[in-house]
Each structure stands twice: as structure tokens, then as C-alpha cells.
Image (cartoon, rainbow, N blue to C red; front, side, top):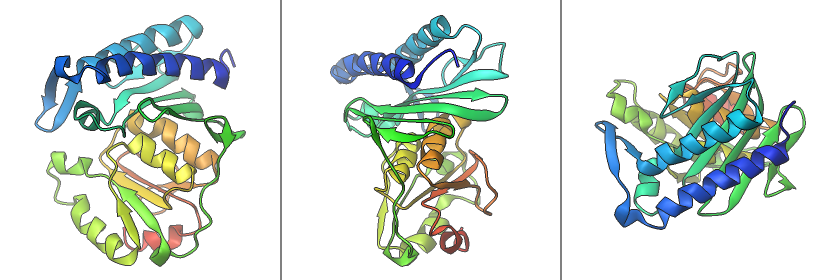
Length: 254
């Protein structure tokens, strides 16, 4: 492996410094719309540009897929990047947004990092080696009862105007659980599952760059990553992450 987790952390933290320069001057932030409810800012573009250049310098043999710039020629081994997951939160001055970077080789996620610069929380994982938050090993929760669980979700699907949206699913699960949260960043939601702060997270109609790093981190922390039918794998259009112990209980409500 031409890059270590420590090397990746250095690059991602430096990208966080780029993001924070914009975050600390939101009055000067340029915000535009990619679609009716999908925002992009100068910060998204600047962070992705920094990551693309820094990762290419460190690992020129890997391709790149970024939310803002798209795909380079080599996609067999590639970095999968969301420069700011939670752009709307970022633009409002909220703290819950993150930089998501994953390394995928031959279809396998092998390394990932999610950094929340405003919170200074850095999550990372390497395939088969575990997951960490700020250098400390993390594990999913030990909760065994859905009725006592706290869950999180998102509503990206609403901007797709799908008949099968998340509202009815949310209502079913909300009635069956103790606590529900909507934080606004799928990448960080997955990390909260990994850290045991929530017991499950689901969302639909996302892209791989939204969830790649977070899914690896959650899985390496002992969590389950499936679609809404329980098929194992990273399915951005239907992603369900749990601590594994409540998976069967939540699946019947999906």
C-alpha cells in the first residue's frame, strides 16, 4: 500500500484547514444550486481540488472520483471523495459536516477517513484492521433491543420526488424506537454508528462518495452494512448500517 492511514490523515486534515477558511467567512461564501435542493459552494470545489492534487501526488497510480469534478480515466483503483458531505449544514454555519475519502481497489473498500473539521473529530479505518476516532479504537454499541435504540436517518430521497420516499419508513421506525436523529451528513452518521453513538442509520438515493468511507468505518467497528432487504454490501441507493444486534428487528420495518 503506497499510503498509510497516518499519511491519509495528514492530507485529509490539511483539506479540513482549507474548508475551515471558508467556514470562518460564510458571509463571503459563494453558494449555487446543482439542482432544486442540491447545493454546491466554493468550499466544496476548493477542498476537492486540494484532495485531488494531494492524493495524486502521493498515489499517482490511483484514479479519482469526486462529487464535484467527476471521474478520472483510471477507476479500477480509485479515491472516492465527497469534499463536504453536509454542504447545506456547512452553508448555515452548523458544525455537522465532514470530508469523506475512501480508497477502493478492484471494487473493495480498503481504507477510509471521515473528518469533521468544525468538531475536530477524525474517523478512520483500514480493511481488516479496525476503526478509530481521534486515534482511539471504536466499536458499535451493544444495544440488543430496537425499542431501546437511537437511530438516525436522512431525507435526500425527497429531492428525487420518489413515490417510495423515506417519510413513511421513518414514521414506522420512529414509533418502534426510543430516539431519532437527523444530523445532515451520511458520512458522519455512519461514523456515529461505528462509535456507538447511534445504533442504526439508514438512507436512500445516495451516491458511493457519500457513504464509502463511513461504511468501511462502521463495518470495521463491528457493524453490519446492508441494503433494506438485508443483503450484505454497500448499496448507496439503499444503505442500512446497524450495530448488527438489532439488524433483524429493523429490517422488518424497512
